[in-house]
Length: 89
Image (tube, rainbow, N blue to C red; front, side):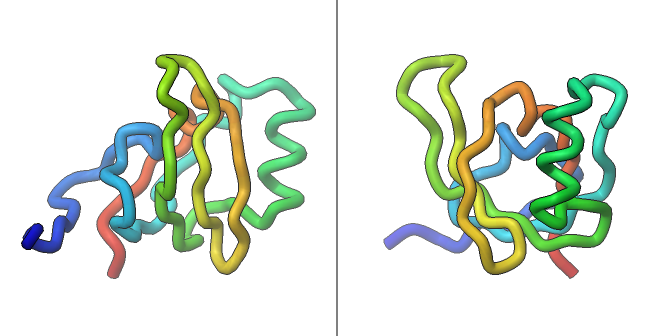
């Protein structure tokens, strides 16, 4: 049996352990292109939103699947690295 994992410090979404919920602490909007930033905003991603990493592509720079609120979305890994996640409150 695996013990439940929890976050003790903020991490980037791409480094979040799978199936561990967290809250968006900050987003590095300046590192994203305008279309990438607009898409995240359209998905409702902003500070305080609950996120969870679901899957990572087996290749190093492949996409990640995450849950943003109640939606499941796939985003590029570098976009996930722009999202800082804190432990869920």
